[in-house]
Image (cartoon, rainbow, N blue to C red; front, side, top):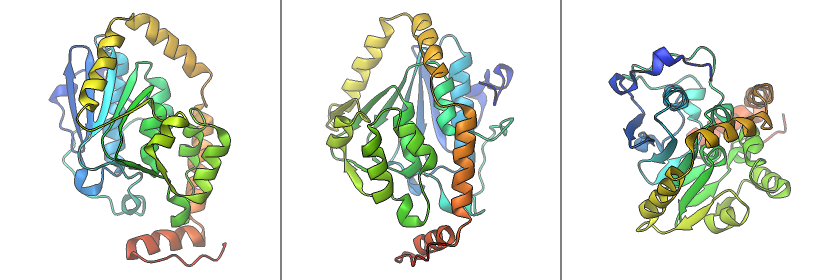
Length: 272
């Protein structure tokens, strides 16, 4: 990992996070998305904070695994469209800018530590980076999964690539081009979710996984995941997909889709 250096991340617990809560306990780094009022949408600095915390976990030998969770009833609504349009909200984060733009799909590939997603809220669009990138996903049984990009004049390019790692190709394409909500039980059937449980038991189920992982060699797991990284999509592929997103965003349909979303109306497509 090269967006931050070990010296930058070593004092992580003295840093000020605006959009995350980061806690360390008994070899586990807990990262919680803390932007519930905005449905934990991916603000640019939230992405930087996530990269910073994950770099710390990668560099720090005492961290054996990560648990990613979120506050509120939406785990993550995907990219903050207003921020993408240049209306990013101010913040008090002390996390520095990374050495180059963060590619979330690539970020999960490079951490080389087991990552558990504890999903207690709905997930949409770019929020699926967390699920597809995690090695184990424990989800509540009453949540919704949606890919609405095509209804906004966009397309989930990078999310599609991430989903293709864990789900059948035809199901991924069908989901991307139709933009529907996928029941969490179907997400488990198609491999996106490891286990579905109820709200009362999810904490217990996550703890079971943590306890089981602690019985295994952290070094062996690290090198195994490093080997897995070698056969995963490359940074160049993620960069290309980001470029395709920006290309789509620049179309008339892309501009109309975002405008219609902001104005809470049906988009009028032209195919341009």
